[in-house]
Image 1 (tube, rainbow, N blue to C red):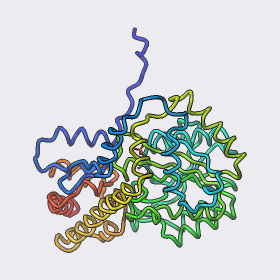
Image 2: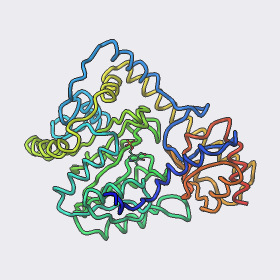
Image 3: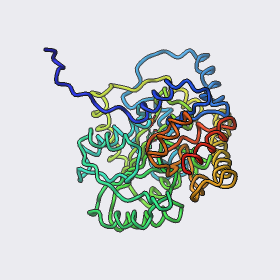
Image 4: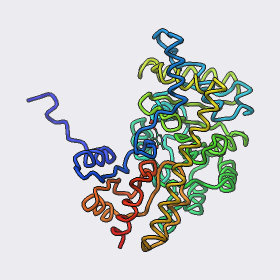
Length: 401
Ligand code: PLP
């Protein structure tokens, strides 16, 4: 008669399931395409040289291990929002962006959506019809209702922009929409700049609220400014946006949990009120955030030399992924004459590719070739490299035929 006798067994996390199956497989050619973490061309995790240098500088500085303020390390938070909004951003210059350090991007979403649950007029938020699985879980845990907008077009394995716009127009005025700023996970397909501008116009007409998740700044194009375009455009147009940032992918700081949440406010007085509520929200949750990762990120963002190195390293990661896309397309389409049009693989951007592979084909890849991916057909492009690409393409082609 244990106290926990009635606790039901929950479903396994889809991605962790893939990793477990991969680990148990003895085939030396096995590939794990499930994880959303960058790998170098040897298939190894990558600690950025700029991060290694920052580690050394921090070690030398001999910091203490005192608590951070509730909203984190100010040097980090200020630099993070500068990276996202741009140094010429009007609300940034006017000191009206409320911001806090968070436990990476997930923590930013949690704080941001908790804030929405407390203070946003509608108790719901629209998510794209395909999105990072954790989005809906966080929204629900924060006590908000999940609504969906059209994003995915199965025909083109791309964006259903007409349907997206129709749903934005049909939503009640003043609704909140979660938007992926860049490198949409899982689809790998973002709106074009022209489409963002058009969407922004509709948001204006409808007085909607844009809640941005930017977990991949720099990962789509390799250029921070370009990936931040939607965020900056909405802000330039006068929107009071919310923004979640993560430094897991672009600095490779996955396990350090470095992120930020910010809200553009109308003026300094409003910012002070919002800041006070962010503190009230965070204090009973985890009191204050961890210091080490934020110090690393701050060191890189605030040192012109490290920042320059980091920019090159991010571009290097983005470019390696882009070259894998081109090579994979070429193998699938031209060398193996795989049935169907595979140009989406080349057109998509960021860490992931939504292949359009069916669940049975995904199962066949695991059974016959020890190639593991989630059953929705999403692959991490970063897990492909010059040694395993050919094997992967050959087997995808077989699975499709
Ligand atoms: N948002 C999206 C769309 C993601 O894909 C991820 C990670 O995969 C995150 C947020 C949060 O990641 P983290 O909490 O590791 O920063």
